[in-house]
Length: 146
Ligand code: SF4
Ligand code: SF4
Image (cartoon, rainbow, N blue to C red; front, side, top):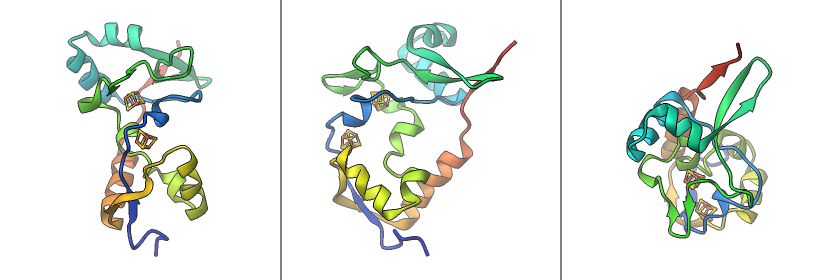
């Protein structure tokens, strides 16, 4: 039985901490690249050049959103996420990430970074597992090195 079988409380407080503060990656799948490009009215190549960076993995690159110098996400504004309706799954499934859910103490330690954890809406185990399944079915878009 999962340690969160009674569900977990989480409500986003829109503080933007998870979109800023420390260096990090927001990886993109092929579908996410298509959806965000289309939302912004850009050709995919234009979107990739303007808003993403290549993360060297040896034989290939993963694609991540760019960060500003202060490590905030390129799409974070003072009104929140400017691509909210098409934000990547990595963002929309937080904090119900596999590695955070692997351990109760780890999940609640994340409250230091995310004040919405342990607050507000109760999410059932079924809902949480649905988020995990979505993440499992999604692949980062990889650019193979030539
Ligand atoms: S850190 Fe948590 S509460 Fe703040 S914006 Fe991110 S998900 Fe929402
Ligand atoms: S895409 Fe939006 S939700 Fe995701 S890190 Fe950037 S600003 Fe935050």
